[in-house]
Each structure stands twice: as C-alpha cells, then as structure tokens.
Image: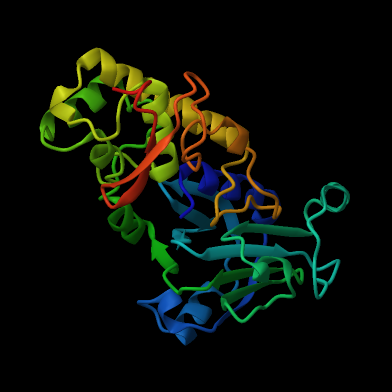
Length: 306
C-alpha cells in the first residue's frame, strides 16, 4: 500500500496536469468503487466539475473542485491513477524510458501498483473508473483487487471521512510532547503498534515505521512503557527525517508502488532495513533480521537497535 511519501508524490505530480480541468464525463465499471453513490448518480454529480487543487490527508488523495465538493481517493493495495493527455494516444505497449519521459513528461502520468497493466493501453481489464476531461485527456482509476475507492464528498463528509485520522507527522503539531503523550497513553503496546495505528499517527506504514525505528536505534518490538522520553524524541525526529527524504526521492519502489511518471521511487538506495533481510547492516555489518510483528513483516538490526 502506498504510504505518506508515495501519495504525496502522486499528489504533486498530478497537480501539474489536473488543476483547472473540467470533467466531461465519468464512466464507472465497478459500482463499489464509487459507493455509496450509484454509478449513474456519481457520473451525474461529477459532470462539469472543475479541479481547483489537490491535497493529501494521511494516505488519502483529495482532488478539490471549485465549490464545496471533492473526490477522496484511496488506492489501498493495488490501486492506480493513470493520466493520459489528449495530444498523444497511448501505445499498445509503453516503455517508461527516462529519455521518453524527459521529452514528454506530462503526456502520461501513472502512479500506484506497478503491474504490467500500468504500461499497456488504457483502459485495461482492471479499469474501474474513467474520467474524461473537456480537453480530451483522461484519468483512469485501475484496481486489480477492487479494494480502492473514489468518493464524492462535500466539506462535511470529507471532515467525517478523515476525523479518525491521527496527527499528520509532517505538521507543526506533531511535537515531541505529542508523541510522548501517545506512548504514555498506550503503555502495553509496542513501538510498531503505535506507529502503525492510523488513528494515532497518519500515513506511516510498514516501510517507514521500520526505517524510523532503525534510525532511532529502537527495536520496533519494544514496549512503549520501556521507551524513555529522550528516545521518543529521537524517534519523532527520525520519523520526520525519513518521510521528508523519501518525498524528496519520490517515494520507495516496493512491489506495489510506482511514482507518477511510471518510474520506481528513488528511496530504495536509502533503505537501511526494509526489504534487506539477511543483508549486512550498513552500520555494523550484522545481518538484518525479519520477523512477523503487528501483523506485518518487520525488519531490524538486533545489534544497532535495542
């Protein structure tokens, strides 16, 4: 599932092409994608909407329209957003060669789960929703496993949709004391259980949880009650640092994410533990270990982290 840096990357790159575009039509191929609205009602209510801005709350991408309505989009595990401009038809098979991308950077923008359908002619067999804009460009929402969703919401509904989301880790309100207070409130949870709880801290998933714990030299399996205030402060600094660096590098290329021009995210060389099972720790040389914890594969160095 794309985490905070990946959704932020998709938001920034789609903003380059979507703002000021007017929706000509919306064609729904899987009714649950746009629930609770029916496909005909969703199409009717989105017609002639003009995109005014894009934002992100946790892992939710929000496309705002002029007025008081927005599209809230969650890619979940296998969702894709693919923008195709009107000036060049999408070939039957695309190559995301860097030279091609540099010549036509805004013709095709693709972000999300990187299966082969991303680089093939659109719509694909996994296309659940197509937006056509008045200039002839299209935005495709593809989803292999059908877990993702696109909801048309007003300001009140958007607030309800996001009210259970925890503190944004890149916001000014995510202070040392806020994280210390969270740890005190849940003394019997492990560090990973706290960081992965989206109702406490928004947008941190498996990758950045493991990486932040490594930088802070804290085992993700450690009980929060056994973590001192100075260690929690270091953990907060590590969370912010790893998220900012990943955004700078356009996200992590894992099995279910591509940046929005179809290329892998550039954070992989900076990974210390995630996806490096049995490889030597970059600090001490000890082999990186992987266990299952909090329902997820958990990576760490048991020499550097305590």
